[in-house]
Amino acid sequence: MKNIVKKLVILCLVIILLIGANLSYAATETELNNQKQENNEKITETEKKKEEVQEIKDQTVKQVQELDNQIDEYESQISNLNTQIEEANTKIEEATNKLNKAQEDYDNQQKMLEERIVALYEAGDTTYLDVLLSSESVTDFISSYYIISEIAECDLELLDEIQNQKTEIENAKKELEQSKKELTDAKASKEKVSSELQTSKNEKANYVEELSEEEKQLQAQIDEIKKDNVAIDAQIKAYQAELQRKLEEQRKQEQENNKNNGSSNGSNNGSSSSGSSGGSTSSSGFIYPVPSAYSRITTGWYYSDGRVHGAVDFGSGGINGQPVYAVADGIVVLAQALTTSYGNYVIIMHYNGLYTLYAHGQAGSIMVKQGQTVKQGQQIMKVGNTGNSFGAHLHFEVRTSPGTYNNRQNPYNYLP
Ligand SMILES: [Zn+2]
Image (cartoon, rainbow, N blue to C red; front, side, top):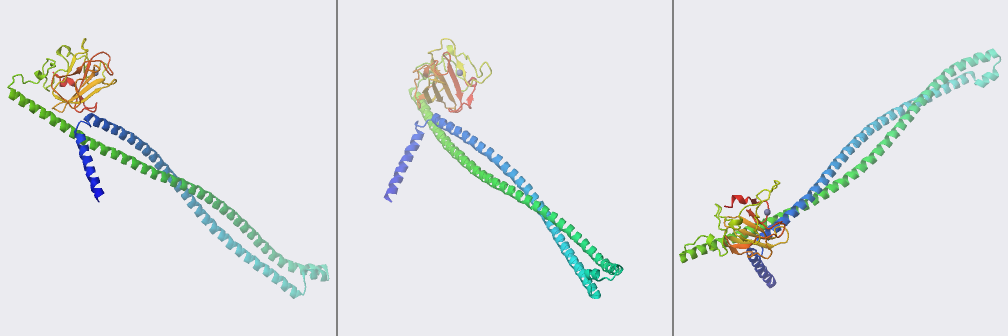
């Protein structure tokens, strides 16, 4: 139990430290935004994977349906064959009955013939041979034999006829049996194919299930990252609120100082020792970020080829090494020296929720630090040519959030 309490206390301390760290400048807004962007890339990647899985699943489901149709087709053929086999069975049964009847007729007829011959024999106390051998004369023989043979021939003809019928029925029955065998064979082979199709269908149905499971897992991953993003958004908000509060505090402090001093040069413009651009202030409260002699915009919101520039450039001749000024009071949220992209650049957050970005400063010229408050007109670096720049110029952006390109605003609307 003591152990658990100890652990809980440590955990609480860690949480308090973490919260403190989040609100400090350790986790800056830009870092958080970068983290969010990484998360969004992961989401896109995972969603792509999920789409691929869905596509395979859709295809497999289609295959299952096709197999189902084929199986149905086979089942219907098998059912047809069953009907035909049943019909054949009925016919074979009929033939068997007929055959039995014919056999009975034949047996009766034969019995009748035998009885007649016996009767004749008994009556005449003679046989065909006896008649032949004992005939006293040819005429006698012929007449006796004639009578017997007439009757016997009639019986024999009948017997022959029945025998023929029997043979016919037997042949028909054989044919029926042959046809039944063929039907049964066809049925067996179709049943085999149908069973193979069923196996294949089951395999594919299992695969669909696996894919559904994979899809679910990918979606769970996406949901997890999205949750993480919500947490990051909350952190960004807390960070922004903290900055805003700090900024406000600074402002109040200054107003009080001005009151106490009774100073007449209360304007923000004049408070910087580095000197301002000397130009006017816009309705947004911004001044030019460079000295007025260099405030001509050389590239506007659009490039000459029509693509969006997303910024304005100050690139007049001789601007290299000129001071870059904060266009309004604020807090530095990023000061970074890159060799690519923006090169040496600074992002400042202002009271009105706007951010300004100053890029391509001279190497080693950045004079401000992340988290530091700056005054309007305060020099933050020197105009240079670092990063993705061809010729010294100041690349100046206005944003509604520091992290992404998507919310860049046309600086024309904010500058004097
Ligand atoms: Zn530019």
